[in-house]
Image 1 (tube, rainbow, N blue to C red):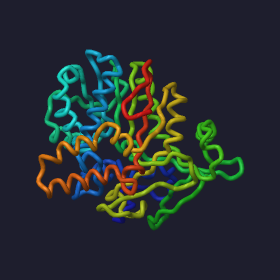
Image 2: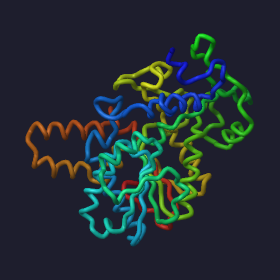
Image 3: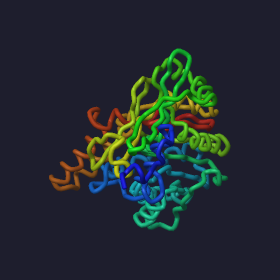
Image 4: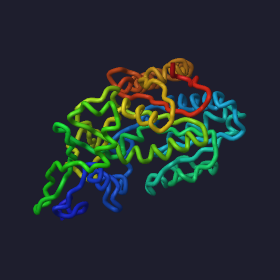
Length: 354
């Protein structure tokens, strides 16, 4: 059996987002349905695995935001796409240093993938944590939604604009199960949605995260209804451009997204200008998107590292420095990764943001 036969029927036309959704999530064959993607033995490493200091800074930010929300007796946190649970595990340990906050917080993990959910439960091993697969069930606030590298993993649509017409990129499988692309006139509802965004109107090539925004719409409603905010950290860009940002990683190396289907990770960069416009359309206020470096530095990650550094052997000091450099350096994750905040609350002073 050729690899493509596991995923697709011959001649069926699939939009880019549906194509990659199948490759990533199809039961028994999809990338996230068959393997653990994280760590040295996987295909990539996320910030919580690079250094626990990243997770500590998120914990500090959450405690600070609880204070912004007037220290409510009940306070709800939802992590979106918790990976292997590394971040939540550090959060729980850090929260113990803040007893009043610790007794107020309720943590939920939003995860639909059974393999990852089982891994999270094993790694976290804490009965306080509850798992969700339906965000509409959340009824209480104030609430914070948090996601690290969450949006980039949700497949996107791609379009080209010719004059006043919009054509959607599709893939189809020929009789030899080879993957070919074809552009088809966009559906009117997609054309209407895309033309409603100012930052997309002048582009000749457009990436639009329709699936991701459907989920964010539910989250936005919850934030507006229950009061709270959503913090997203991801790699992406601040100005709309005409670039194809879909990328793939296989065993920590770049991979053609159409190769190693079901075995390689496939993501895309987040358009933060578009994201902010989306949140404003959904009745949330936004802060200016900032770099990961600025966010972590403002929360005190350098000072925290210096305290820890004094207790370490030289080889461990070097390791700590190298990991910190990876998170903060402009040539690594420091500038590529951005931090975005949307909120619905009477106060607007959030740690890390001007």
